[in-house]
Amino acid sequence: MEETALYPPIEPSNFDLIVIGTGLPESIIASAASAAGKTVLHLDPNPFYGSHFASLPLNDLVSFLQSQSQSQSQSQFESQPSQTSDDYASTPLVTRPLYSALEFNSYSSDPIDSSRKFNLDMAGPRVFLCSDSMINLILKTEINQYMEFKSVDACFLSDAEGKLENVPDSRSAIFKNRSLSLPEKNQLMKFFKLVQGHFGSESEEDKISEQDLESPFVEFLTKMGLSQKLKSIILYTIVLADYDQGNLKVCKDVIDTKSGINRLALYHSSIGRFSNANGAIIYPIYGQGELPQAFCRRAAVKGCIYVLRMPIVAVLMDKDGGAYKGVKLGSGQELFSSQLILAPHLTIPSTLAPAEQVTTCHDVRLSDTKEKVARGICIAKNSVNPEVANCLVFFPPRSLYPEQITSVRVLQLSGNVAVCPSGMFVTYLSAICDTAVEGKKLLSAAMDALFCMPISGNSGNSETDNLCELTEGKPCLLWSTLYIQELTTFQGAFHSINYTPMPDEHLHYNNLLDATEKLFQEIYPNEDFFPTISVSDDLQDDGGSEQDP
Image (tube, rainbow, N blue to C red; front, side, top):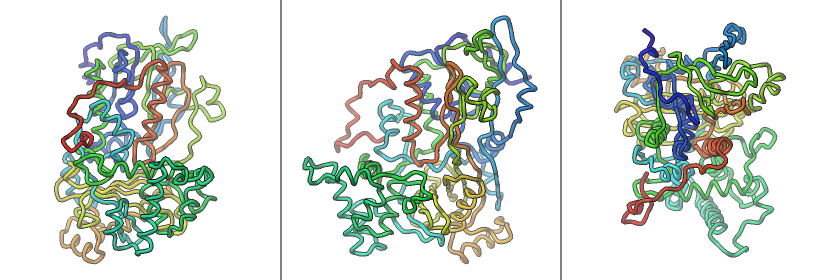
């Protein structure tokens, strides 16, 4: 008997909004719509919450990546023609592949044997700045009662040899840093003071000029007399630039000074915001998949109905006008709504027409984004730095090889954030790229810098592992995967059908949250995006700082 046959009919059968997929954007919209008093049905064919933003056991992550990388040709879509009834045309809902070039390497049976003890992020690496917009929304909606966080212990800058240098991101860190010369420490202190004065002073003399604010940030840093090393620290570990800012010919995203100092100010305001956070950056215990689940819990409290393990096989369209009417479930039931939200891996066959035809098809088209995100996950039994458990590592452009034009970001996590068994470490890597070959070259170079590969590809022998690590002085890999994720999303939609954004290339959620809020306002222009709720007095602790998330 099919699993869907076990489900009783969903009641009621009419809703203001049906959301398919429990990824982060879908979960936020479902929660916001429920808070606005809309009737919402939230469906997911998966047996877990989070979709492409989930945190999964190792074996489940492998299975999900493989299931979402299967290509389906147009001929397959055409073999499933739309079915019509007296009232509606039933158009099949199909999956487009979002992942490609999957590569799995297992050097030890230990990770596989402990598969259920892992919570691996699909869209890692990803962290929170304590003052960023997502943390503000978490506090505003009070979903922090469903989540716990730990500090990321340290940030490092690395080169092709895997030499890690601490990032001096605050005054105290500058004084303690041993890799900076005294002139460099003075330069960095002077620059941080300049930025602080720009935001904190009423005097125009302390403000950075409009001309400088509009200039490329890298040029302003040069004008301020900062060394190349200091510029790399600011641009790629604090401001989080994607592309080589020193080579404007290849840089696809030139950061101006105004944006640069705003990001710098956000980072510095994150330090010390919460009493239980040691630095600027925190990570959720049990993985990033806790975030969409928390928004789903809030939506459920507000009346949203949830059904997992329920395939959605078709979209119901008006026979005459082609307007959206509802969806058909794998159980055979038909449900109706005014609006439909689709996860980014779902589409209607006609939207997969050739590019020259797409723009004429109900104004549904793929975005012009050609970039992809190369992602990697490594499991090792030792830390990349023996002194820290959870840390960020940055490989700026040209640090791995001369042709490197994008930054590689690395996040290592330990068992103390409940993402892996005790005694193991999980490391996420990502880099934006144009091709799979380029992306894998970037991540492989970073992996070679941080890890040693088991001799003869066998890490089952502890003596072999120890020899590997003693020889190279790096942790030995137990398991790894590399994959390429698409960034393209559908723009426009059939009337009343909208698509949520993909997991993006950033370490933070700020851009994704902006896009999600914009989508909500397009659907419900007269509704507030999470109206302000009364805040209890215990949001302030005895020390006067904000409530810990």
